[in-house]
Image 1 (cartoon, rainbow, N blue to C red):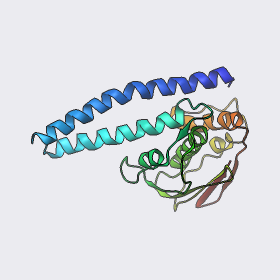
Image 2: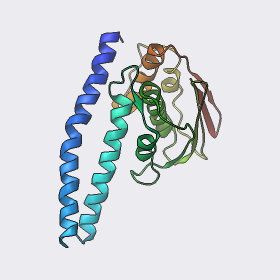
Image 3: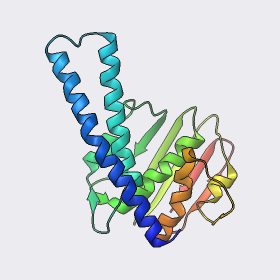
Length: 199
């Protein structure tokens, strides 16, 4: 993937997320007005409100993971924790996010892409701990059942031009180019019930 292709991919991601945020916000405002008027007190309306909240969180997550991230930009700890809030968007993994304070957006982008890899490998849930020491990230996860695809995890450290990556796992294909852009390398350790990633 060339630099231009990589930049275009991120710009497309930013554009799609940007265009979806406004209508989702409008739907959320409409639901809130219905609830305030007393017309929204029903299980159906509660389901719509929850779905809109979930969609908003996923869009905000995707905007960081797939969108453009210029050098020098940062994300606040408050924003990161809001997007990763437990139990709101149906995420089954419990995330212990330990890095404190505002962080470089490029680094958080990489961490969010990696988080999606862990979600793919842990469809039955588990615990993920994220730490950052001296600009070096470590993500370690434990789960009773893992769904590991060695070829996909291998993409984090080596190019596999002949490997067809399905759309649902595109995050695996995007990590290595982003690692290279940030002059980083990834080390993955996989066991029966654990995965560790350092970059």
